[in-house]
Image (spheres, rainbow, N blue to C red):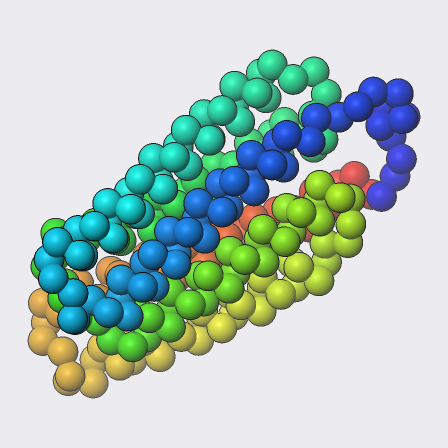
Length: 214
């Protein structure tokens, strides 16, 4: 990476990395709650399901607050550690992943889903994997460390999610599920894959940022 003379003369605020990491932690917390929900949903009472859904919605709300704080700080800060537009792009995509996960979760109540295929649980595990690596990527950016291995790992996880999505779609049309179940689960799978794609996009975006600065 090229040395910018401003890095030597003026300190750059690192709080943005901390705020983005807090958002990533909320996404990881939500993913863990979601995984615990789908693993045990068939044995849960309605009030237990609603409690998990409320916890995920609370995380999503806290994520919105953090996104707002980052935007405010971008306007107030003279020198940022990355381009303002780049910080903004990373932030809105972390928040987007949180929003999608909350959206999926709330549909469990709206669609009256009380049991899910094993692949939904497997998808939840993949989301936890890729979000964990995203946190490591943000740490590497803060420390100005190498990021290529993190980005590569995220893309490998995204490829695994693609294979899982295709096999999950194939399973839906084996005759095990009725048409209503197919419609519900297809939407769940599509949005789970979208979360992985959004997080993987952040990794690719960061790699592009590093190319841009040399």
